[in-house]
Image 1 (cartoon, rainbow, N blue to C red):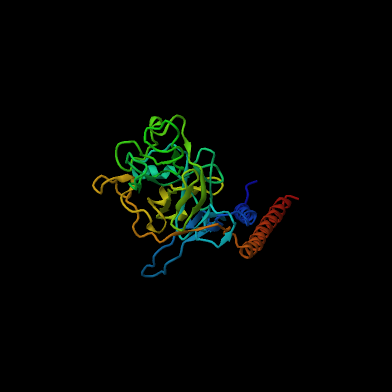
Image 2: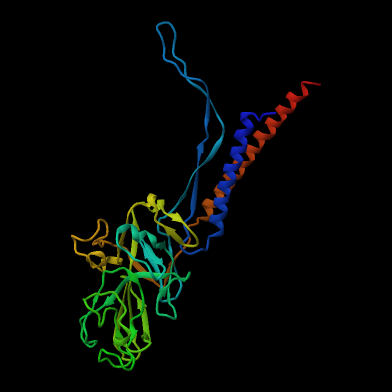
Length: 359
């Protein structure tokens, strides 16, 4: 026996409300998850069956409206609330929270950016639980390398002040320490920045082993900190010289709600998110991305000059779950689910009566 339209509508209502309740459950489960963006469900009407089309009036008769029967509901969208949330003090000096729009850029160590679409290969995150790993790379809690702009130099003498901030987007890593037998006339333990001993100012490459010395390691440091501009500084523990490691980069997309949630706190910028732009907090680093001249820079890859987004160190962004809203939605969805079960039971009773006509 074929199901009636009412039963089909009731079943669709059960499915839709269960999916909405799943979203509420996920929001509540992540009430204490740093950087979590709560989901919001919207329903939409399902397909309609037209019994008769509408008609216009004539000289003698009036017009008629169309007659259509709906077949229930479905989930239209599950949107993420990407607005900034309150911050929570953690006491960890390398924790960073974004005050405003934007995302941290994280990914593997080996990525190449030749046009603006390549930047979308990076993952975006609002959770800045950072630390330096054993190899000197700045990583987040998931082990992904944080990207930014490094302090580099093309000078031969490490004692000079000829250092600058590269606009090449690269994994953030501590500078290397000169070891005995280096080719830069540097004292043992001295800071050797990327590009030192290499051709070209701002060359974003590790110095050759012959320049730094055999098997170089990153510097020994103290007083490591990050400021509101994403500027990472420390003191070389061997030479007592101040060191600027570089700046943390931020990425912004045209439509944050169009981001695709992958896993944990990470998002990817698909077509729905629009173009991605790269900047440093508070426009601390300016110029053309990847050291390109304005004529060579691909469209959309120029550094933002007016970014007002800053970082708050020692803080992380709280979850976007509002328990009061979620509990209210839970009641609404539960009652909606209950009402749809009544449609099914009433339809079942009607079908039973139809069967009993044979008796």
